[in-house]
Amino acid sequence: MNGQTLQAVETFTYVGSTLFCNANIDAEINNRISKASSTFRRLRVNVWEKRRISLQNKLKVYWAIVPTTQLYGSEIWTAYRRHEKQLNHYYLRCLHNLLCICWLEKVSTTEVLMQTNFPSIITIMHKAQLRWTGHVSCKPDDHRYSIENSVRASAQSEGKENDSRTA
Image (cartoon, rainbow, N blue to C red):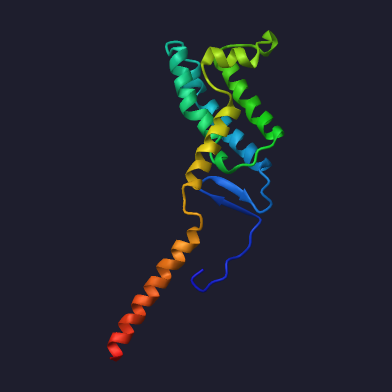
């Protein structure tokens, strides 16, 4: 780049997401869940445990912050079933906490999602991936082609300027 050779690295962090040379997302999934968990814990005293804040408002705060933190960068993930299970487990654990449902009560996932009127975390992730795919598919087939044409046109205009100077 600009005459310098870029160094090959094993991991690269870009805007809060860590990319790995082998495309393994295990560490990224754990990182995202950790960040979402930290966010959820920080809201415990000021939001989750406040009795004067309605459940609806708590759910709105949760929806705006926790799943978005948990799924940040998921548009480019190739998530396997084990990743989906990890994400779903944390997502449902938080919802159980907000709804004051004890794990011993054996409330189904469907019932929890119906009570909150939220989609599953997998659905949210798949929608984000489809939205991203749709965005990328709207790009020209060969983006390099348009860049090469711009460079070629620029070079040709410079050549014409040089030709006019010599004439």
